[in-house]
Length: 476
Length: 103
Image (cartoon, rainbow over all chains, first blue to last red; front, side):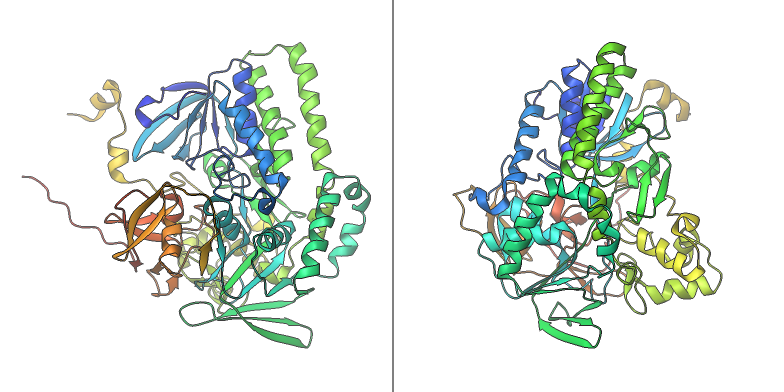
């Protein structure tokens, strides 16, 4: 790997451009570079690792036992990438991907347009919104946010802590906090009883998967040491200028817990903005309850030459992400002529086999941790669009007045028009409209997304290097 | 609200948060400095003036917007600190100073 590149050092064209330095991007870049492909990897963070392996090269957490061995495994992926010949551009925000594979990227306040013969998007996942009353109060954040503060800044919360929601990350962060000496006041689990029936069919595969042994150990350690309330039906956060208490309800039971920090989590979903803005087709997945890209067996999207790998291709976890990255890279290598049909013929199935192994057990997790409808579609004054402060009642009211979908909702209420560009509200708005109109989310659709998918100043755009022809075209 | 685990010596830099000096590890994201300074909320919203703090810590929620070195709408979770950096809470929508246009 060459030293991290600045904007001025970027070439105008690469054979393969990869966006995102999480497990998928790192694995893809490493394999592509091994095959002799001129590869560049863009990433928003200052160090490789994505979110799951964030700061793995330089975590200030000294005690390895706190974060667990799975985290440190990410180090091997980073090391292999850093030993490769792929170009690496950290602190790079990709704000545009055109269907002809022209990439708009901003590095250190300077924008550049870069072309690529093939693109792999590995922009990963983000946490599903969890719109409970009071979720916008300071002192309420995602479980992932708590984990990032721990991994990259060795920071842990003090005061009274409540963790709420469902999904493996809930227990992982609780386990990590306990190991770091943090006291947790309560875990409020929202997994409905009914989920167990849906999950039962997938249990055999789960028992054989790598997730079972790990999960069981984690769960039992946490449950021994923390008060866990199961099958919670309602949660609200209350406070004036910041969080002061968390109230939960289950049937006729109700309790208010004083709290300084509330961590919320109900699974992760693909971060679709760049892929959708590029025009890649997505479809509603009724099991995972999110929009996934339409891909072939090697991750190629509906746009030729643009592939998607990792959790952005569909939630599958970190190890699946690495295998998807390698599959997309070997397919790109074949398309670029860097590997012949024979090599492709025996290498590709190897990665497919590894992927099938790491995907085993995911169906069980998807079913067990299917977030309940009431936590996906809020009511009343609960904020739906955090940026523009649009409530659930506002959305339902607009539907009653004839607003048919999310894109009209944008114009009427400005939901989805704030700085996050619908990342925090898109799924909620789609499902709220679907519920109000008695349609499926597939029928309702999603926000139409466009570049720039991250903010860029006019000055940066104006300073884009322009060819002599481009200048002549506008100068009189 | 957030405290640091005891860790090995890291090189520290001094930044100011609303004028108050805090010492934070070099290269850490500005959001860490906010917590070091004891802040839970870092801004108030443009529409209804409500207090907000960081939500996702990974650059997708845009709730951690602060003014850094005079430039508003900077995401604290994506901006690494540097010696002498000035971090201030952002109240309401960003303001843009009118440009001086030379005749």
